[in-house]
Image (cartoon, rainbow, N blue to C red):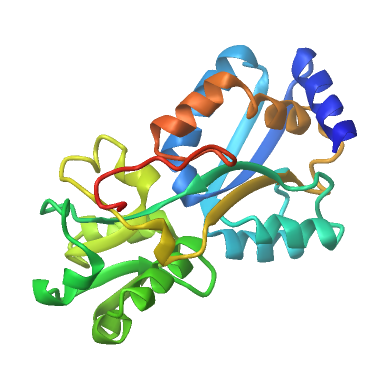
Length: 258
């Protein structure tokens, strides 16, 4: 681990002079936060061409196994980069960057103060969650609904997004009245017009998030340089702005988290 940290520090200290294309695969909960992080990074390294593909962590893991040319992989669940690392498809041991949280959110009504146990009383036609089979946020939504004792009652009303960003879009388009989405999305100004309700963390397994460098990105200086940049204070501030909790730090308390 010390060797990896030293290498990252060295890369971060060295400027990039040659133009290099970097392809990043990122979990959809990072969409808005990573856009800001990349904007800051491009100011410092304008010669690096960066392409980002957002999706569900599980599906992107499968794509990497089938040869998708992603250089850096940001996963909403550390188990996926761990699997790739163990399989020899990633060259950097997974690096923790955040803990994610889930919230009850609606584009039409204020969900603040509404608990999961109250959902059956709202006479919902549809409740949107991410697909639990491959989206970590969907898995955690399912766990929370089961823990709250409302899964069976609401199961027939569920509609599924392929990833957490698409889940929010389902609600925005009218496909569902309420959605369980990432706190990081609910904090984006366009989605924050109505209040959300933070779902208690004890109702589900942690959303421990991590990144890695794939075998494809191993030889790219820009890949190592970018993950070193992810450890900077400016990046941590952006992540915290979007509600990502930092591993090892005390949990942020918001309304509904008691």
